[in-house]
Length: 285
Image 1 (tube, rainbow, N blue to C red):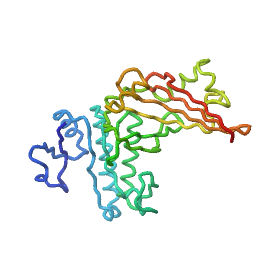
Image 2 (cartoon, helix red, strand yellow; image 1 turned 180 degrees about the horizontal axis):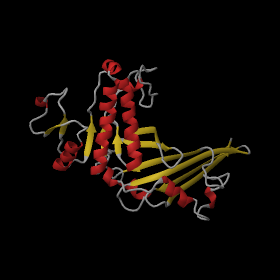
Image 3 (tube, one colour; image 1 turned 135 degrees about the vertical axis):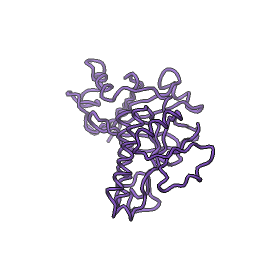
Image 4 (spheres, helix red, strand yellow; image 1 turned 180 degrees about the vertical axis):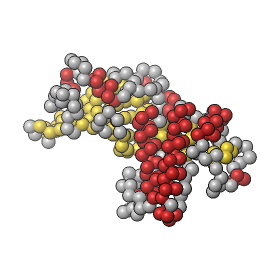
């Protein structure tokens, strides 16, 4: 895979780009130039670094910062969607945390930006997340950790995701979106789980859903994606048939009743709605 640099050179210098790396001089708001570059160089992924980045200056120039950092990213994502480029790395900023309460700053620390620059970078994170939910964009942060990423999916049809945890693995995992097959929406999968008479144990006071098909209190939903890798092939084949990658929707509900604590866990193949595994653990509260 060969890189291509797209830069308007308003702050950069052309001679810093290696001679064997193509340079396209254009703003990210230039829809035609970006579209042409994707076609000319068969671009399959984007590392988005372009932004105005002076915190103090942003206080005096908030409109310019929102237009460049937010408006420009909207333009970029629009071209990516049009060209079906779904791999995206977004360069955020420590400015999203403001003045942190502790150092080092954890990735899941509260986002409390203190200036327009930091605010635009927070909006950029929201844009990346929401684009990922809306059209299955594969987006990652700029850290070097590889491993499992665990997300909670909020209630409602939009399926909003929030980060829960990331665990490093010593398996040399490399993200390859094309290896994970397309999935059904979580709404469609839940309709299948609720189909009359299919899984009566999932409905009621001891199930995932109430009699109306709504989520019972205490239900957590998550998404787990596994992609092919020498160290993961066996695990993937245990989840689904074949070795093309796997995505599961995971449901966990814990509740207490009559002095007992119960936890019901259900894993569902997100590509077919097939229930892969269930577990009910009961212990004295």
